[in-house]
Image (cartoon, rainbow, N blue to C red; front, side):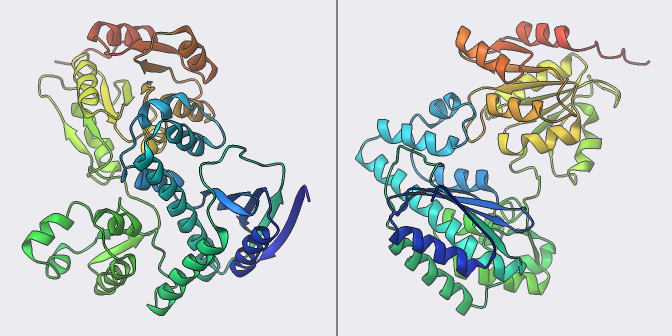
Length: 410
């Protein structure tokens, strides 16, 4: 059966199909789509065992949630080399597994199991929350080849179904663990906690961290966390958002006096720093830099704003695309070595958007090899600056691709 399609099925039918493929010792992929095509999951099999799963809600946040909880040496270097393959995260895991010791290998295998279990849970819950039907497609041609582990399909289905039964029993069927709690009424929220707990929770219940991540990072039971979140929501203390907010705790630095407009856009929650000696106007060109290093973001900001330009520094490459599209910069600096989404991949994504396709993009790279420059050109980079980036090199790149900022008015 090279390709089999089946339209308009329920979540139960999709889970039954996973079980059927297990008993058939199937090798290939099962792709499950919502009828609206808003979401897609893909599960890969080898002889009936699951070897990987991807897609669904917030896949990059899921990757970051699990990869940050375990010690993974070489993650950043390997992630940078995996430019833009269709199964980039799995390729990273395979390469990490080859380099890891026994403890690290066990952690990687557990990461795979966690991702698979989470995706199966979301598939089970989808029809309950949305009332929407699903479509699935089975393909023997879509095969990952190399595999890190063979997850026992029968066991993980049984375990995840038990989790779902417990979730339903708690009355949480319509509450997704992928929701993002955000404080709506500080006074109501504060009354539910001791002073120390309130101080701890205040900066993290800000709409940027999902219920899953809150439970996992704090070693708490997910059902208990979600039950408490439901109680707080019913009190009016918090809201539960379907998508994460952009806030100061994981979005970055804006340096430059004309940050006000952007700060208002991000609900006045972005970190703003300005210098009275360098007043700029809203008409001044805007430069954005994406680098996971706070030190580098701040250093670039000083160079840029002292030259009279507006500046946004972004540390989180996952959120960079949205911020860039909303801000419409005149020049973009991208670090090549970033976790989750590297500079090559982000550059490629930006070039596919009509708003950014002609905006100059300069890659910041610690490598000065012809191969890296060729790879950069292939994804649409305009130029390169070697790291550690010297102020003169940054200013030369700005001069090459940008108009000079307007002179200050007396």
